[in-house]
Image (cartoon, rainbow, N blue to C red):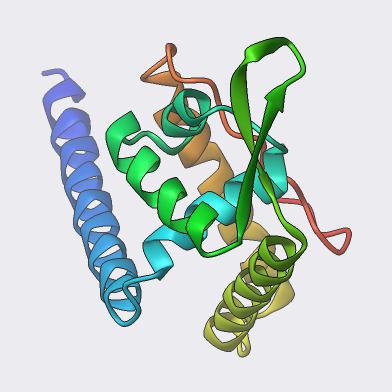
Length: 164
């Protein structure tokens, strides 16, 4: 008798476990975002900080959200002095969004708060556990990105010499 059904059942159970953990993570992140309504716009600042100036349409694709959502959020950020519109060097008829000096400061502060949050979470983890988690998470995200080849993968910068 073949072991294939047992292996497939085990794989399915492991996948269901991972789904439950991802859902828990999404809920925890959403609770953090809900604590400050402006945080939804912080992702835009961080994306532009990491990727450089870009058009609203490109920003929407990279953030996997509707362009109208990004457009309204970027309008708020422009009005608040965190982003500025400049002429697109590739097409002078279009504009790109870039961080202002204040936007750079806010993006840096947001990135620092994220790092502090993760530091609090992993403060008692062994270095090998952090490395293993990072490696597995990178592998998992690579697999997710491979499921939707039309969406360009985001760059995954490493900081402080730490690689996963």
